[in-house]
Length: 352
Image 1: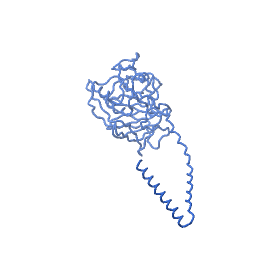
Image 2: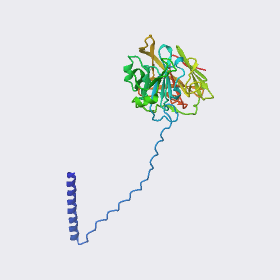
Image 3: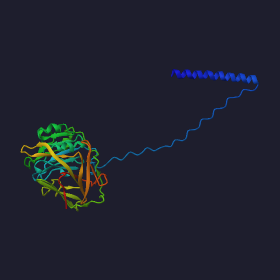
Image 4: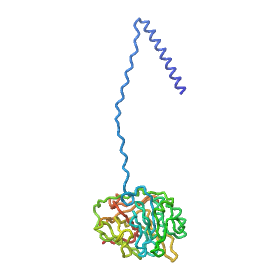
């Protein structure tokens, strides 16, 4: 700053000397001294156009998990459920936004139900965790993950997972026994109490799923779709009157205490995955399969009584799965409960 001041002062002195010289020369010639030219008036700045602020983007009003009304920014609870005939009827399952079907030992399966839009008073029967759960639910964040135990070697790995484990075997609050059922099919979870006590922080967030009531173009007729495991099966039978698929498990209607008749799904995803030996098993020698859900593969989407071939992609544990149509765009699901069936890629669903 000081250097600039000295420069300005020297320039001012030189200007003064020049002015004196000019006056002297004018006096010598006898003519009048010329008046300095007037400085031009500064130009007026152009008027500034007033730009109206953009309106805020509308907040979503439907669940990012199911497209149902509500369920935006609400807590998330995942409950592991038995899916054998002895577990029927399920309690609270109709309120789930997403239901995963996972293979377990001895060629059967279990369910993992995601609740957010609505938290029922009770859900069950609750059963134990498997190693596949860690990858499946990592994108959901710190959800309350509700189980009735797990293999001892698996427990430390579950504790390091992205979710908060709520374990009845460790006397965590939020469980009760239904006196009208026999062990081990009588354990029920209380999602509302679990949300209040577990300390889990995750809320419903965008999982990349797209919902649209308009039926996509194409597809093939799919009135009955059967998915098989070595010792059980699931069927999804189109119910035109209800506009949804009736869910059958092990050759019987999948029933619910809350709604008469059969459990129903608005959209069904059959996701073909690689199954590998997880290194875990039960005490009777059963080997636990692990479903590899990171990577890519093929599958089907069922809705509106039709089936579409899809591809699925997932680049990392933290990222959700993208379900893409033939053009590589997100496949639109019908709003309502979504069932995601993980099946060995060496098998194929039968479409009837």
